[in-house]
Length: 424
Image 1 (spheres, one colour):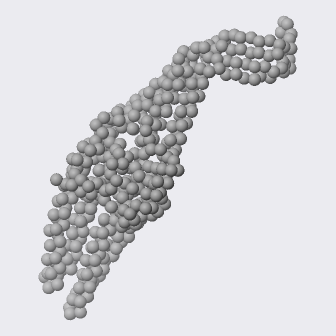
Image 2: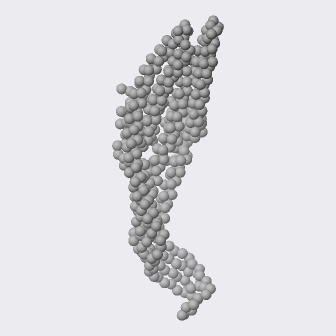
């Protein structure tokens, strides 16, 4: 199983890339953050340590075929035999090697080798999961940034309206009553901006963990899926073979490990046959020893536990297969739907801007009320927010698609800059 190596050398390269990349000085792409995280984040070190731990456990099981040699020291305090002897006193050596265990040792080795495979695939799964979490933080901040831009434009409209209203009121004092309504609407917009800024800053602060501890600003955020063609994107990153999905492969290894654990548990309920020997200064003996727990409820319940663990792993395997198919289909559909919504919303924005311009002119000559004008501003903001929501839902769907196909790391390595596909 291949996985990203971690070393001081590779970390130094990542640091040098981060410091001297001219593109990074201007913008910080999601790809660049993920590239650094896949090298430097300790989450992956933990996953690699689990692989080494599982390999050590396999060695423990393999040692079941090897002899065990012990030094002994015995001092008899009291004994009663037909022929009393002190020969058991003093230092000695004891050895034991298994002759037959009904395949129990082999089953334990098989179990632990599958656990090694499980952790190897889990490393890839962890990398994909971490990539999705980082991407969600980045896209959350980007969504908030674009939402703030809409409300700031709305705020400028309200400020312009208040300024114009002040001029009009100098000639028509009856219009002063409209100022409070305009101020109230302006205050609502300012409140929304502050709330979105809080959401954005929270995401950026959390994202700093994966960006060398540096907190990004709103201007650093760029669209990672700018102008992509949906069909090209889907075909490029589609993983048609479920058996290549690391989550599926990890669970398959877990299932096989559980099956081997059931075999090992059954074997432990059968007699163990060992060749044993002892030696001291006065005597030595070599003998075959058979040990069989004819009553040991713990082994019975352990076998049951392993069996149900196997059934749970089998069910989880089927659940993963269905989940991958469902997420893939849903994200593909969402990408297409949201791309169309963006196109429709942009047309509506252009039309609504004309409505706003007309209402502004009619407001100046008192043929439209302030409420009519403010409502037109509000409607334009609503349409703009619909476009922002559809655009960001598209990004979320694209990232969800990559995650469902376990292609985030593949996307990171192949897309060194924001995607350059063009719409047809």
